[in-house]
Image (tube, rainbow, N blue to C red; front, side):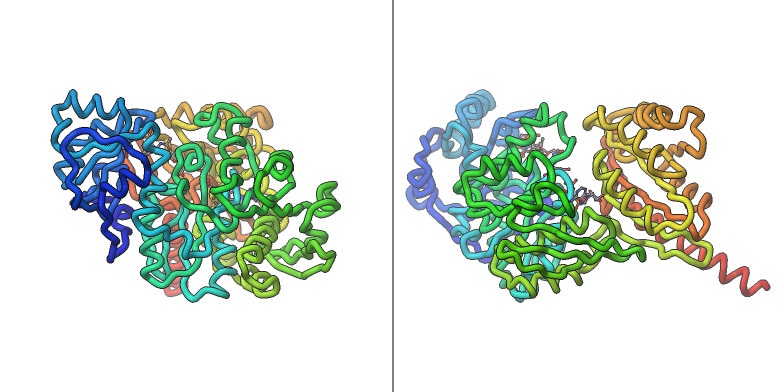
Amino acid sequence: MTSPQGRMRPEHPTARRIVDLVSRFALRTAGAALPDDAVTSGVVLASADVLPGDVFVAVPGLKVHGAAYAAQALDAGAAAVLTDEAGQRLLADAGLGARAPVLLADDPRALAGPVAAWLHDEPGTRLVTVGITGTNGKTTTTYFVDAALRARHATTAVLGTVELRIGEEAIESPRTTVEAPVLQAILALALERGASAVSTEVSSHALALGRVRGLEFDVAAFTNLQRDHLDFHGDMEGYFRDKAKLFAPGQARRGVVVVDDEWGRRLVAESAIPVESVATHVGSLESADADWAVVGADIGLDGVGSTFVLRGPDGAEHTAASPLPGLVNVSNAALAVVVAHAAGVDLDVAIEAVAHAHEIPGRMERVIERGGGLPLSLVDYAHTPDALVLALEAVRPITPGRLILVLGSDGDRDQGKRPLMGEIAARLADVVVVTDENPRSEDPATIRAAILDGVRSQRPHLTDVHEATSRTQAIHDALALATDQDTVIITGKGHEPTQEIAGVFHRYNDRDVLREAHAAHETRVARQGSIA
Ligand SMILES: CC(=O)N[C@H]1[C@@H](OP(=O)(O)OP(=O)(O)OC[C@H]2O[C@@H](n3ccc(=O)[nH]c3=O)[C@H](O)[C@@H]2O)O[C@H](CO)[C@@H](O)[C@@H]1O[C@H](C)C(=O)N[C@@H](C)C(=O)N[C@H](CCC(=O)O)C(=O)O
Ligand SMILES: Nc1ncnc2c1ncn2[C@@H]1O[C@H](COP(=O)(O)OP(=O)(O)OP(=O)(O)O)[C@@H](O)[C@H]1O
């Protein structure tokens, strides 16, 4: 069955001759004879997404070679297989060598994007395109940028971790950055739907695996680089190298880089495309030299947002605002304003639009307002040590009582961060409820124990520390412990619509659990009222 994102294709695709594809990309051919008039109108990397007439790109994966799924792709009607020599051998071994034309390239993964872009008539060149990378803040900044682009473009698209959205139509997103052929098909569909601008989150995995190849962004943006994904990139240097690929000629025309950390400064120094720098820490050394700098910030104590002053390259100062709490969102808002401006939106229009951007699912999202016996309750996606520090620091000033944190850590991902997160939780929250995030194939108790090791480094007797084996229970526990002077913050899963346990994706969402608890509370209060 085609995946939902695999169905986001243009309704009126162009058909192109496969022989033209062969000559355009200097491919070698093998397998069945390729008729001159054979055409294709789709390219896919996943066999499950094949529609009749597609070219199936079979790449060597980290787990398996895509050629292992060629039979499935051909059964679904694939017109040809684009692969490498290892793939060709696998096809021959499986007796599929003569079943369809085989198009050969040394690195088919690198070609998947450019081939799809060519097939869909280079949709990226007909849209204003913004790509945002960095460890944290991609989603938030992307939505802020979209808010500003919407002030100038009647229809926009937003592609990222939360959703794949064109205009007002959206579906859940399978990951932060979709595979290259899916991305190109969505861009073509966005054009059909009248979109003229698109903002895309670009993960480091995407950059390492060529998912944005074939798309030259008008503006690339960098938020920050913090410890994450070292299981995939090896070390921080490798992580940085992959991120830096976005700021290369052919991949982006110009860049906007936050220079608050050493990685941003290095990116500016090493980038081969023109970049503008943005310093967002008031009074920092970087702010004197940066093209743009936040020179004053007033953190709203009502938890709603902050105002700040942004100094431009000409020295002029502009009053701006972030609609979300915390200094990190001043940083995201400042970056978004500069990016939108670089993408053609007038500065004052961008500032105004970002200040009024809508709430972003699972990013400092206020699900229950303080009052009537209930604490202010927020859901946030912080799942790295640095993001956790910033999230807790952002809610402390808006918390008259205790800060109650529910956290876990992912299974099958960077294990080193678990005790770090525990240590931060114990240092910056008053009450800590340790629970599960997405345990995946790991034993959830082992993950919790690693977090608790970090907690113990600060609180040897685990005072005000609780452990809950179900996330729903953890949220209920946190609410039960709280008064309406407290703040409950649930971190790690944000908008995620599922919880992955032992290979099964269970429908689950932190916000829904909070909303249900809120509704149950209201019903209880109403019942007590009617009894009284
Ligand atoms: C490390 C990584 O990103 N791996 C992704 C990658 O795997 P891979 O290329 O090694 O593929 P593989 O599973 O070995 O399979 C090889 C080939 O066979 C194909 N295949 C496989 C099975 C099948 O039934 N039919 C089929 O055609 C696959 O499409 C693939 O082309 O391509 C696969 C197919 O598209 C993805 O499922 C897989 O994502 C895995 C599930 C994943 O978890 N990715 C995460 C880490 C990720 O990409 N995260 C980033 C960032 C997140 C963040 O910043 O927090 C993201 O952009 O979401
Ligand atoms: N500029 C920032 N610097 C550090 N932390 C941030 C920043 N912006 C947001 N955060 C924190 O990181 C969390 C994730 O934010 P967001 O979803 O915007 O980032 P992301 O880069 O899209 O993350 P992911 O790639 O994991 O989806 C937020 O919930 C918040 O706690």
